[in-house]
Structure formats: C-alpha cells, structure tokens
Image 1 (cartoon, rainbow over the protein chains, first blue to last red):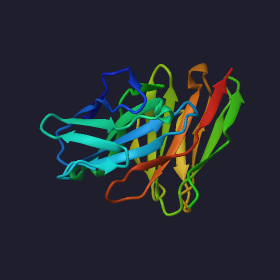
Image 2 (cartoon, rainbow over the protein chains, first blue to last red; image 1 turned 45 degrees about the vertical axis):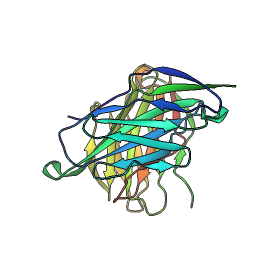
Image 3 (spheres, each protein chain N blue to C red; image 1 turned 90 degrees about the vertical axis):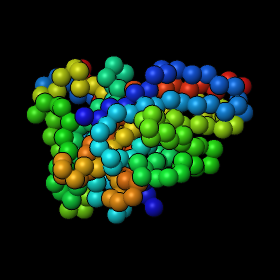
Image 4 (cartoon, rainbow over the protein chains, first blue to last red; image 1 turned 135 degrees about the vertical axis):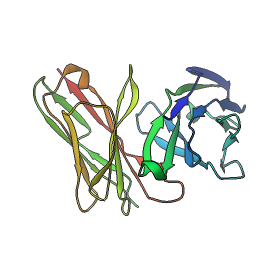
Length: 119
Length: 113
C-alpha cells in the first residue's frame, strides 16, 4: 500500500526567504511519480512540480525545486524567495505505476502543510 | 487551451436527495479523477475513469458512482445524500504518459442540509 506523510501541519516563512516543506512516502513499487500541489484559499488545486522515480536529477520549476532522496523516501519541496502569494496549503502526492496491478494506480495525497508568508 | 471545468460550482441539497456533478477535462486528456475534500478527512480519492472505463476506485459507499462519456467528460452521482457528504468535490484530468500530473478544476461545493 502506498502512503504519503507530511509532518508539518503549518509553517511560517519570512518574505524573500527560502522554505522547505517535508514529504515522505512509502511504497515497495519501483515505478512511481511524486507531485506537489498548491491550494490557495480559493480552493483550486494547482500543479507545481513532478518527480519520476527513475529521474536522476531533482526537478525544478522556477522558484520550486524538489529535493528527491530516494533511499530516504523523501520528496521535499523547496520554495526559494518566498512571496506573499505563496501563502496556501501545499499537498504532496504519489502515483504508482504497477504492471502487476493493472498499470496506473490511484493518486494518494498527504494531509497538507499550511504555509504562511510573513511580510 | 481551456482548463478543467466543473459544474455547478455551488449546490445546496437536502438529505435523501441525489445530485449529479459534471466535469469537462482539458482537451486531449482521457483520464478523469474525482476527489472529496473535507476539513476533517482531507483529500480523499473517489474514482478514476480512463477511456470510459473505471480504472481505480476509492473506499466510498455505493451511493457514490460515476461515469465517463466518449468525449472524456465525466459525471459523478451521489444518491440518498447524507449530511456528511457536504464537501468540496474536485475533478482532475491528466494526460497519460510521462509525468501524468493532474490538473484540477475549481471544484463543486456541495452543502447538504
């Protein structure tokens, strides 16, 4: 069974500082994808960044980077130069691809981290 | 390219009624997933459809059902509504292949009274 754990219910960061949001995952399948989503107070989920289990390099998308440590089963999101608009809930998610189980499996989400950026 | 659209955006129903929510995916996306989001339970997976077939299913009672049409549009239905069904229902579509990231619609806020 797959599981995503986000241990930080809430975090504060000063504007223009960098912040790391933690995510650990648990699976025995070798093929999977890891995702981060942002959910502002408006409610819409916004895709931020993706990391494949076979990717050799850490993913980056603008100010977002994913610190992927496969042996530790962690996929932390790093936001550089925080902005006030970064205040939101952040969700880590995982999707397995399992040949034995029929292909793509459901996406599992963590419980989220509420980030607040302080001016 | 237009994003994922969901209708209606807000809905108020009474216990015992049924409701149908609609989701139109991004053009070319054949996978559509549905999620229920509540403050207490977080984001919970309902089901996923791919090419008109249910590919994955979450742990929800049979009152929750869905379907997908040949144009990839999807509907979910909840029968015999309960107070606990009040939630934000999110639909997401994805393109098969590398990444497979999901793009979400704005959600339907369902209130059951």
